[in-house]
Image (cartoon, rainbow, N blue to C red; front, side, top):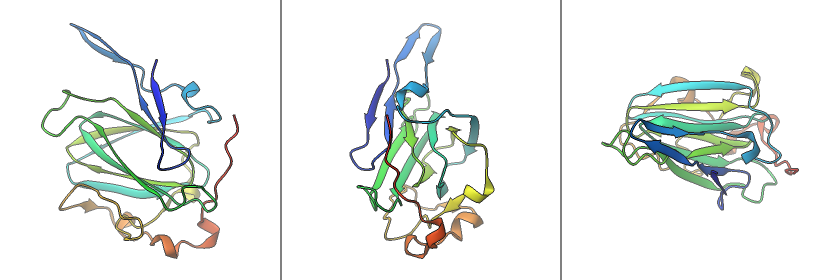
Length: 192
């Protein structure tokens, strides 16, 4: 059975260490199970992204959508920041490395995943060439695709890359202090 560890930095975030079953043929891993997240909604869409070393994606956030991320190939530095007004961890930043250590693709892969609730800004840096898969509990909705500056000093993200490649969209995101009130996430109490 997987080990689900709630974050002690950001309320509602959980890191999953799955069981890995292997033999001479290879490995089998259950990378996601809805029952790992009591109170979570059903994940209804799966996505995949391939990124080159040095790329940064984010910081993005949603008012209504949760994500579950898994890195099957390469290594990503995941950065999360709690934007939710009223959250006991409002303003906290969490950094987690997922995937294989640089230079050892497929070796020492931790196979952990991370659950990200609505209102928590999320992004990642490709520490190596990498693939990320993410499940979401809502279909793509451009009105719920929001962002905050990846390099905002108030967030203090350590991306782990020296020459980041960042999209024009992510370069134009506002700083946390500039988020308009209508787009400010609020903390929701979880129900069991």
